[in-house]
Image (tube, rainbow, N blue to C red):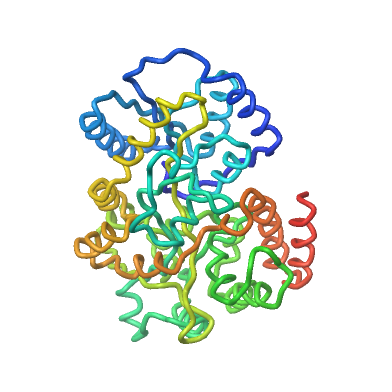
Length: 409
């Protein structure tokens, strides 16, 4: 589904450019029913597919057209879209993970949404950037997600401990909560995008930056992870865990706290007797901003050359991302509405997720600074985690990572 965090397969920009360029130059391709439109997304999960079907049914009625949903696994959206581009049968609306959107945009495959009449009014700057490439707005988010600190209320209460707010407090709390088979904290440091997603709040909150990995600030964040591992507060298996694995450990009582996202809430609520809470991710020192990564999908209009259909596609996106549709989708999926007014109303309905909304307010896009180059940095960081958490110094691992990110290899 679009909002779960799924490792992606990087597709070379040259391939994307060649396929998309051929479509744009040769026109819109096959003839289509003028009253039938297609949305390609990754809502393969039954719940998400049903929620999107309900949204599209309402938008179909409102706009007087038929909107059909086509869903493929999240890791296959980009390759599916490229196959459709090569056969000149691109969907009318394409939902991309925000980290993939810049690659499609850079290749000329997307229409700027403002050119089609959609605005960014009432959307926070960080979320506008989330759907933008080089300052141009291509993708409208309905909802966004980020990471937060989940904790077992009963476990902390029994130990007489408060929810930590700083790195020092979290390290000390995690040590005290580590008993027997239970670790104080669980997080994903696996060699995939899951691990990078989870590292960004530590890197950014410590003043580190993805444009230069070999700095004391980035090394300090990685050293902090190493200190938790050295304390025994993290399982050694953390270098292999996905975010789903982390959630499994927390639900099984094998971790007192975890770093994870709201896509786990539905599963957490399914376990009777699990009394969990949520807080912002602790920061290096009191008063610092907790800066997490924005995650989720954005709705885009592929460049098909058919201006009439592209204008209707924008209306479909406008309907799907309208305030009430955002609130409905957010309440179903436990995400945060992208629109400020919708988010304010959402807060009143799910006050237990206030901390998540606060975290979103300071969160930012992974690709805002690097665009399509993010994938090279991500791969470099993944390799650095594996080396540093299994013995190498953070400095050495990150020096190599920076060289790798710069070379793109």
